[in-house]
Structure formats: structure tokens, C-alpha cells
Length: 479
Image (cartoon, rainbow, N blue to C red; front, top):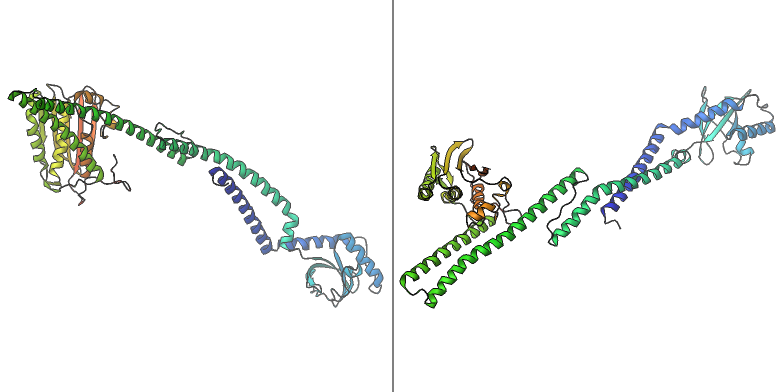
């Protein structure tokens, strides 16, 4: 019954209101008891009775007991009090309760009246406390107007119980109304998020929830929508990747199968045809090997199983080597390959992995720079470490693709037409840079070129793991 958020909010509000009312009642009872308010009110009422009861009439003489009894009964009945007549020694001469048969004779036999005191307390035979106010009633007599002491709880019952329950009823009704409104405000967005999550679990990844409700619920909705967008994009990228890999692997496999079949069937009879077929088979197998190694390398990085071999490394020498290895390819495309490498201090790093990073960046720059263009590599000491940039004058990367350029399996549309990559190179590059506690960023303007910036700190930790695992999954997330 109380499993839903809405019902729990309603019950919680009712419970809070009732607890507050109970605390208010107990606090009021304690306050009344500790401050003797009720007793002062009793004395004030008796004082007012004493002030008005004897107006216009005098008690009979002390020797006329019957007349005194009738007088006491009349005054007591008119003012709803107990009337006592006592002599100078404090002995009770007349008691209206005894005269009316409401108490036994001698119920109150003696009253202690202090000199100049006009009020006091007397107890009857049952030890019940009676408050009294005294006034002179003729020669040798005092008249006492008495009433039983009102207990604080009795006072609350008589004066506050009805409004207290009325306030409780109003509070409960208001709490239910407020709980319904808040439940509508809080629970509805959560219910929609729950329904969307259930749909995602069934494979419907294009789910969004409205950003409404309290700040925390809005934050949850925004995070949920961002998550679903990423999941949807990831699923689409993976589907595209499977399709692309299937297509790209099918082409070399077809070539390998065709030319190997030609050799087996004797179609390639002369040595030159056999050599040409074997060369094509070798080239296609090598391309497949590189693709599979890229996938395996990324899988190792994800699993945190690719260890960095940290040794003192001359980064300037690594960069110079990369320039030398790619200079021939740049010359073939008539691309100017420039290097501006400042003197750099030695750093503790994995030289082979860093060579892989800058080889990939330079390779991409040469691939997408047209003939006659320029590719520039700069390296200099910056604040906190080394800053290396690779800049080209190629076609650039569209603005809508820049946020996704380091995502695995992601390929820019123009890249698909320009080469046969699988969208793994930059993802691997980013993982290696982050493993060195560095950062990589990209700037690009369509039609003008692209600039990749790699920042590597000189101080390295002792951690030799290339990728930190996600807690509980063993996978590294893109940052």
C-alpha cells in the first residue's frame, strides 16, 4: 500500500503534522504546569466571586447555625463555589458542601489562615486540594470561597481540546493536499524517468524525459537525457563500426580468396602472375593485421592490460625520428613537413608509445593535407610540462564532428572517403596521452586546417598502467 513515493509522501506529511501537534500539546502542558497559570486563574476567579458575592447582603450572626447554613448554601449555589465559614481559630463552623449533603460532616474541619493572608490551600478528608479566598464575614467569622485545584491536563481538556483537534484536522487536510502537490511535482518526473529506463532496458535507446521538478530531479533528468543520448550515439556508432569493419574486411578477404584461388586453379600460371598474386595477398593480409592489432590494442587499453615501459626518454629525439621517417612520404605528396623543436629536458615516459601518438597525428595530417600543403610540428617547454602541436593546412574537421573526434569507432564523413581507417587511431592516441597524465585537444576550421595539441607533464607518477579501469567494470571511459 505504501510502496509508491506518492503514498509515502502523504503518510509522511500526516505523520509529521500529528507529531508536531503532539509536541505542541506536550509543550503547552509543561509550560502551564511549570508557570502555575492555572492556579492563578483559579485564584482570580475566586477573588472575583468574593468581590461580588457579599455585595448587598451580610452573613447572619455566628450563633444562628441554621441561618448560616442557608446563607452558605445560597452563596455557594449562586457562585458555583464551596463556601466555608470559620471562626478566629480556623475551625470550620459551616460548610456548604456538608449542608448540601455533598460531603460528610468534618470533611474540612480546620483551616489554617495566616495573618493578613487572603488566599490559601486546604485539603479535605480525601486529601483533595481546595484553593480558597477569604473575606471578613462579621465579628469573629471569616468566609472562604473555595474551589478544587484545576489540574493542567484538565484545564487543557476543558479549554484547548476542541480547538486542538480542529487544528489537527485542518493540518491533516493541508498535509494531504501539500503531499499530493509535492508528489505530483517530484514523483511524476521520476516515474517518467523510470518508464524511460525500462524502455532503454528493452532496447529503445531514443528516450528522453522532461526536465522539471526540484533542482535535484532536474539534474537527474538532464543527466538521464545526456546518458540516453550517449548510449544512443554509442549504439549507432557501434552499428556503423560493425558495418564498416564487415565491409572493409570483406574487401581484402575477397582479394585474398580470389588470388589464392587463382594460384590453386593454375590461372596464375607464369611466375610473374604468381608473384603479383602473392604480393596482393601479402598486402591485403598486412592491412587486415594492422586493423586487428588496432582493435586488440584498444581492447588492452580498455582493460588496463597495456603497461607503460617508463624510462628516461629524449622526447626531442622521438619527434625528430618521426619527422625523418615521414619526410619521404611528405615529399611524395609534395607536402612541406616542418619541425620546430626547442631543447627539451629528459622525461620519464614510454618512448614507443609516444612515438605511436605522434606518428598517428603526423600520419593523419599528411593523409588529409592536399598536395602542396604544409604540416608543422612544434615542441616547446610550457608551464608544467612539454607542449607539442601538429598543425596542417588540410580540409579541416566540421564543427559538429569536433566533440566526437576522440571517440572510438567515430569517423568523420570526409575521413571515410579519404582513407580506410576504422576510427581507432585517435581513441588510442588519447588513451596513451592520458596514461602519461597528459591531455590532448583539437582545434579546426573547415577549409583552413587542423591543429592537435598534446601536453605532457615532466613529472610522472609510479603508476605503470596505461589506462585506469572504471570501478566495477574494468573499463576506461572517455574524458
